[in-house]
Image (cartoon, rainbow, N blue to C red; front, side, top):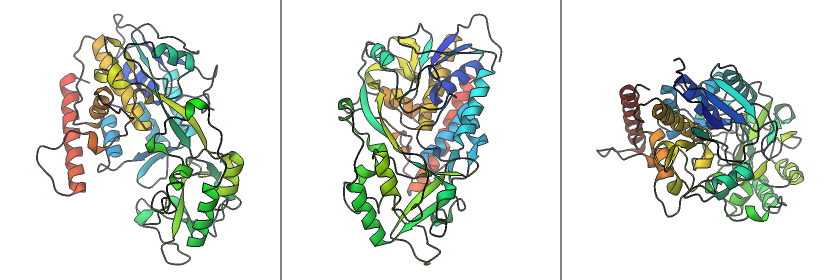
Length: 440
């Protein structure tokens, strides 16, 4: 598509997943973009890289199967030529049935695509006030305090906070492969995961050390809310001795080749980069002090001499009171030319954040080009997420992609898998018609 002189430039604030996807969807439709990213002028507490679309927690973008809501969301985004998804597929690393990426290759591909696009102008600056419309604010869960203060002055605004914890990363060469074995649960997706098996005695010793370990101190403003979907491993452990054994350390579907039996518990490691030199501890988001992480996590069989390339960290996230602020397609109520995207809106997860940027940008592009805005409906994950953050709720909380947010099927379908297949088939059919009828 080519640029029209009648199309105004859209300011996109934030070059994370949502902002980059928004910029891409706009320029695909011939609309010029002014992309403002504060790095390297200023870094948030969690960001380290100068490139766009930095993944600060896991390198996994979750499942790809069409009987999983995350897989359905990817299929929907693929139908709309998602930049983030295509970059992920081009930089993938083995992860069983999940889509995981080499985060450096992933970021580089997105950064170069946008920096080299003729309709994108990149500025590195800290934005401390609401930009003139049209604009999309996609500054993420660690939005700079000055801009947060400006957003909180908008009609209906009310900032909420929750914690986000990142798991540690260890080097592959430091693992004891005489104890660690490679296998995926039920042998699904090959042997993409490394597994650290625990006996009952080893598990109990580890558990006692974990619940007794010293935590990093929190600021007063961080002590109020914890998001259930991203709990630290030590918080899960505090709920009972067997919580981890039936949760992230469950051994189901794994057989230790040394014993021919299912271990008492298993810590799984997922490949972090394309070269396979780094692995992250699955489910081990944490706010233990770094020295305590080294001491306690080195008790895991196979990690006795582990070299930690990055320790787990915990930081405060911010999201908006979406139901009071946002209307269709993430537009600010009363000003359809100002939109929000990413975790700031109350969607939770990498691909969900990307999806919000896609929907916000497609809607804004249609508005600017004189076309009706598409209604992705509650029958697609794209539409259901957008409806979730704009629907009145007495206890609004961030939301991941899941089948529960979709409109129910017209006819009852027996069996969860069959039901999920039907929901996915319907979603793709609906989205195909939306794309066709709106010429997206």
